[in-house]
Image 1: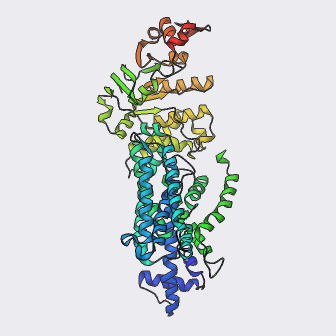
Image 2 (image 1 turned 120 degrees about the vertical axis):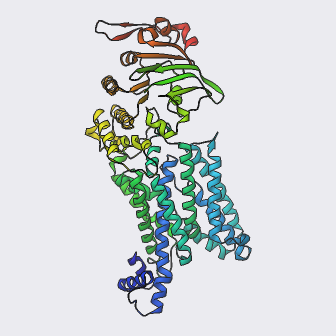
Image 3 (image 1 turned 90 degrees about the horizontal axis):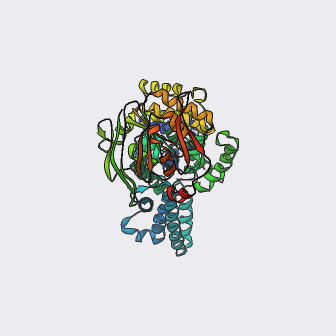
Length: 321
Length: 266
């Protein structure tokens, strides 16, 4: 992370970065006496790297949980419609303009609301006679996603070119706008929710045995699904709200960890969080260095870098045959 | 532990599936549940392992109605090996699958202790799956998988075992091996079996279900009379004890033409 902070449009020596961060965190030590450097490191890059780590961890964990909850290896926050809900919320606020911002809702708040609405819809449509059936949930998610997507497209048609650029950038995701005041909330939600999900690890494992077997193993399958859906919608909603819709992390990272260390959720979830965090910090680092001083949206790079590696792993893993 | 099913009625989608079903399995008994497809066998099992709430009547494991127990408490008493596809794609190892059996013994904060490890090790040894304990479950043969699922059920340390078609699709040797494993546990067992010959070998008592009702029950030879075999299963056959003490069923391959329509639903 320190290295990621040091590299950017201006490269700061790793030692200086360490001194500045250390000084701000503990109040001790003597940082280099350069206000510009301090600005770059502490005010801009540090929150950005911290946010990238949080977003990566959250998306990856929520993908891992959703894949088990709906017994579908393709599931992630996008397939279940959460991301499209958030996108619609954000795009509405961007195009209606800051002045018209729905009753004082910012882009982040609107995106969060969108994700929660999408989650609630999927939840309501995914059940039949009080049972949450996996296939039904996935189909409901895909359908809800399409509705939100077409609504988003319609809103985009009404937008001005400047607004469109903002919308595009938001839809592809970025942590460039990271500010310190966002960090505490996001940190608390991501850490607490992830910790809670890890506690559910044993029951997530039981869910792998199939619904009837899980019931016979003492798990209330329906209630467990509901709780896990709510937690993962909360997790995704929180990070999409601040970083936009970033694809592929939620799908790929969990599979990477499963393929290498197995599917026991008590180990899978913490490792997934860690790898997701590292991955997004790296991707963000690349996004601001490959084309300095311009920035690329994260969504472009996550898939561009991740997909080939993922395919390589698929071909070389015998466990899937 | 004793199992009592008392005047059970179960309805699915407003269709009555079980009507006034009663049966008992005493401590250590192996009771076989037989009947043609669609007779309600799996539904009865679901009521026993507390997956399906009955419309009437009661299922007691020990002295308690299973619906007065929490899901976890019920699962500490009753373990089940079922037909649902324990995933080919789970990514869990054999030991990981067996360890699932310990989950009813833990709340959210529970961690595995010595007791859990002992139960898992014992189950692995009892079912002879030690040799492939570290392999991926998906890489096992059908017979190996069923042994693993049985080990998971034993790791649950339950006192009633519910088995749904445990030996389906297995070769003859694997079937006999599994039967011997079940016998050796000494746990009260309620087993759905398709193969009447296996049922006759394994079980102390049989309960014959037909269209959601019990039509015969008792020791094997009393339950599988030629009349029941003809009317319920639609075959001309007889069950008899052979010189070696084993009960076998002899079939006449000629189907009963009129019974196709009358007796069988599928």
